[in-house]
Length: 254
Image (cartoon, rainbow, N blue to C red; front, side):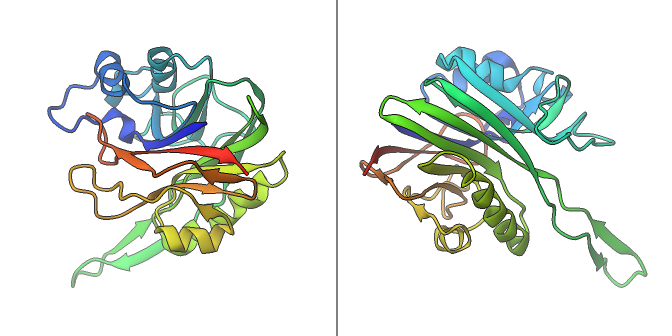
């Protein structure tokens, strides 16, 4: 089974500033895979043409099963609403998505605890900057693959490393309540060794993915629990959108 994880960056083009469903579809038309995990996905946002990007990709690539999970509901500008646990809002949102060619037995959504509010001084003036950690979410699917069921999770973690490690451990604990074997895909904002230690899972796809134009770091990962292994080398695919490359790897049961 070929799995792919891709930080979509809400379809931001590498060149130009045109954002549309047609341009997004053209950019991803040749993406391979049986399971596709997406991060930084827009739904109903003005900046991306108010389209449902998950639905656009699913139709373009021929995925019959797909689900979007909002890290927050509403517009990316102004007030943001946290989603109700296990609920995928019908309105606008921003978050992650999973697409599968195989039947999905069940879907699961879990909001992840954000990091602390951080306060820092700005220059010599008596002003402070308050930074609120963005909300994060884990989306999981129990997939009925040809050689048996497995659970696939998708998430996009905090840019604050200690918070990302905690959210990663929280995600793994949640996945382990679902049928195994287990895969966790996504932009974890951690390096491979750091992610492996925090998750207690095996990184099975090694390739630099960021920035897209000249990758020097791996922020995007495929982590596997017991019973799964890579069938070959991973590849980092450069597409016409996003500041990340898509990470693809073929996996087999062991």
